[in-house]
Image (cartoon, rainbow, N blue to C red; front, side):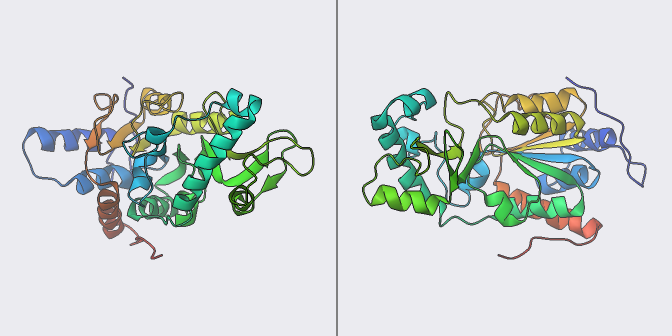
Length: 289
């Protein structure tokens, strides 16, 4: 486990002291809300990073691919090598994409997304590293978003790289083009998301790793923390001295490593955190839709 760095704010309170106070309060049976504990850590952060997974977007009505009822409980994912080699597998891929597109196009950011954007505006968070492909962080106002698994908001040719808005390609699929191909070079078209068996985006991974090493506070939000290599990022952050906070509905393999663990609603928790931090700072809260 990494040693917590002795970072102090203008009042001389270090992140090490804040964590110690939080743990002392818990051990003493003192009542302190999850939001209040987390707000104390965030208010002291200068290089905070939010690392998000599917759990934050389920509160916007999007299904978790892996959970019961999710798309992978109905059909196995298409491996990248099979997508490239088989037209039948590409047709199966696009059939699932049509279903996802219908779900994604009505989704809007929730309080969790908006709270993260508000904390970035305040200067407590410097970036969002996300495993999600839905673009809801950008919709909520987050400016620096590193998408580890790509984005569902662009379709591209796997050969020449020509891009389309997904609406155009979905319309082609719904009109009977089961496995759409590039009108320039004839190669298959694919959402700019990362499929199983496909290489992770090198630049995004390098940027995420650098942010993790430099963070003073690392918020792992709505992630099961089991999908590698992304799940190693919170571990790296902790090893390099960050205070690690996990907010997730269910326990994760990294709970014992974390300084603070919260198993409560993400949106409710982060909305309350922004309210707490805002009262002590410039009052920047959640912006309405």
